[in-house]
Length: 158
Length: 139
Image (cartoon, rainbow over all chains, first blue to last red; front, side, top):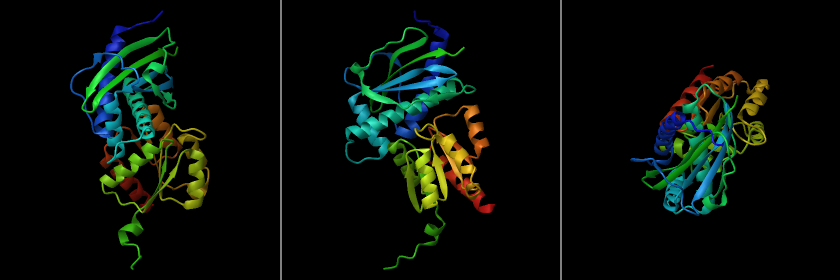
């Protein structure tokens, strides 16, 4: 059974957008205009999952379409040549890490948490095995470089 | 050929970057470069244990360190470092995604000289380093 609190979803969505706006602008020199919309990442999209523990236990998943992945990697690393996959992978991991930390710090500034090492894969390789807690379905943010997808799940620690 | 370092190079710090993400270390270098912060050179480490070895062997002037790292994290590094009197005044600035009150307070209590949460503008990083190094030079 999924425990679903719509007020928490709306607040979490708003907080994530604030976090994403700051991370994209300051670290990746990108921005979003409009959204988010409900949409799943396309098969094969680069995806990073970050697990967090502490006041809340859960994970954040972030995915980028192909153009967004290469553009954000180039922006972050200051590359003049297109990035190789390892650079894209590392940049996506760092993006997920920063989005997770920024989100949690804004959402629960008096809480405490540990963020795990991001795991990067392809969108179709991951399966959702979770059944309880608060879940925010896949959202997509149109950014200058393409599309950024995200979803988040957590359980409050009693 | 004149190889004597300029005054700016002599005063510029050697910075140790400690983060398990190579791309983040690269970003930190770029951030300081685009804000024209003078640096004599960079040292790098992927975790706190490596960082302690680099401190012992290569004597950086300031350390920028992440918190969440394998082997030995940022808190562990600070605890180990400040237990050694010869490193009591080595400036350490934490750069982390964690901006919660409890974390910031704890790291400062452990002996961090500054704390910068990600995301940040490059100028903020440069400004914080300048302030921390200025205070260290004054004491």
